[in-house]
Length: 256
Image (cartoon, rainbow, N blue to C red):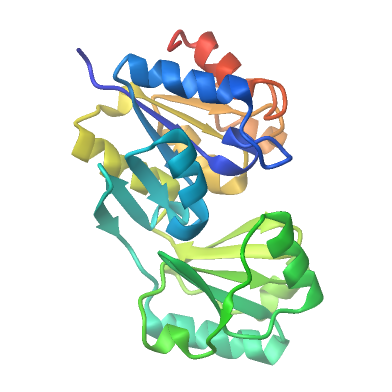
C-alpha cells in the first residue's frame, strides 16, 4: 500500500468560522484513518493552542508554529527557531514604534509588552489564551515564532532580517517566522519521517501562511473562503469552511 498524507490548516479550514469542527469534517478524518492514510495538522498555532484539535481528532502527527516544529508519532522531528540577535533588533524597533510583540514557545505565549486593547481583540478572535508577561523571555529561551500587532503602514518602519518571513494573519496581526520555516518545510520533514512521497500528499488551507504548502503538495486544495490569490496557489478549490469544505474536497479527489 502506498503511504499517503493528508495535511490540514486549522483556523477557517478544519474549523468553521465559529471555531467548531463540523460533523462532516470529523467523519471525513475518521474515513481517512480507516484507510490508513496519515492525517496531520499544519498550523500557525503552538502546541498549547493546537492541543484541543489534536485531542479532538486523536492525531499523532502535527506541524506547528508555521512549520518551525514538526512531530511524527508525537515525537519532535524538526525544529527551526529565530536567531536571538535579529530578534533583539526587531524588539528594539517594535519598542520604538510602540508595537506589541508576543513570543511563542512550543507550549506558551510570552508577551514582551502589556497587550493593548486591539491586540487583546486579535487574541480573542483566535481564541488564544492571554500570554504571560515576560519582557525578556527572548533573551533566555528558543523562539519558534513571534506575533506582532500593527497595521500594514507600520511595516516599513521595522527591520526585516533576511532570515525572517513576515506573514499577516489578521488586519492588525503578523507572524514572524524563520524564512526556511514555512508549513511546506514542516510538511516535507514530516513526510520524510512517514515515508510519504510528495505526490501522495494533499494539503488544505485558506490563508497567506498556506501558500507554500498548497503549491508544494501533490494536491493543494484551497478552501472556498480563501482569497483568490490563495486559491490560485492550489490545484482546486473546495466549498468554504462552513459548508463541508473538507468533506467535499476529499471526495473531489477520491480520498474518501
